[in-house]
Amino acid sequence: MLMIGSHISSSKGYEAMGKQALKLGANTFAFFTRNPRGGSAKAVIADDVERYLALWREKGYGQIVAHAPYTLNACSDKEEVRRFAKEAFADDLSRMEYTPGNYYNFHPGSHVGQGVEIGIELIAQMLNECLKPEQTTVVLLETMAGKGSEIGRSFQELRMILDQVELSEKMGVCLDTCHVWDAGYDIVEDLDGVLEEFDRCLGLSRLKAIHINDSMNPRGSHKDRHARIGEGCIGLAAFERIINNPPLRGLPFILETPNDDEGWTKEIAMLREKSR
Ligand code: FE
Ligand code: FE
Ligand code: ZN
Image (cartoon, rainbow, N blue to C red; front, side, top):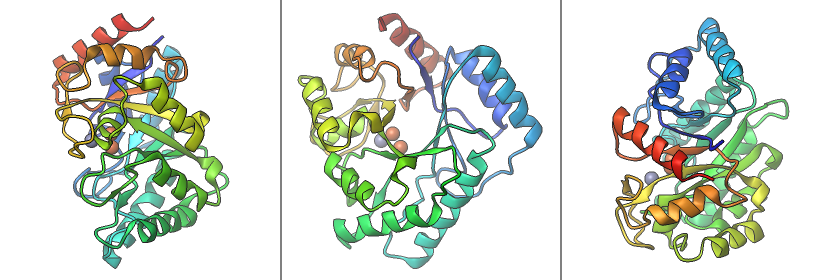
């Protein structure tokens, strides 16, 4: 069965997220580990987590994909921003262990003019200070659109990060369809070619999750404006191929489309109908 869901508000805790996911017809979901544009985190309540875990076990559902806040930038040129990134990242990873074996996705960061090499070094530095051999969470680097000085605009840049991470067995990749399209990868006309390049550069076994978003802009635009599935430049036919592509079909698909609950319910149902 297609594993698909959307972003869900974490403000009411884990059990509420699980129930909300069921309401949308989802069997996976994403949530922000803390305020996405600020940084404060709510305490994890053990009972609440237990009820969520029981619900997920009862349904037989699999992994969920947590998302780090947008404000987390490990390769900022400002010391205090880098310090927040490290503290928030370490704290998120320790809280993720309440729900073992899931994914924690983050945007690698923006080097803000310091250059890609220094940026990558700083990102790897944070990862090397925060990853622990005993953690069960897999940390995902998200493929980025390449707007501004974003790192992760190519599979090669993600490879360069992984090459500098000591515990790289704790690392995977989350492919965002809007972002790779905006970065220039032709997932509409040449999905197999793009996946071959991913495999050559990163290894398909690193690919753990998909952010499934249409794009408001043409390929290579480096804009990062998400559209609803079938309402952007990628188009429904390409998404039908994406969800049914053998290396991708078992992965969790997360919608980050501009929608309300009703819209996500419809998108989830529509994609389920297209999945073979
Ligand atoms: Fe993201
Ligand atoms: Fe994304
Ligand atoms: Zn995006």
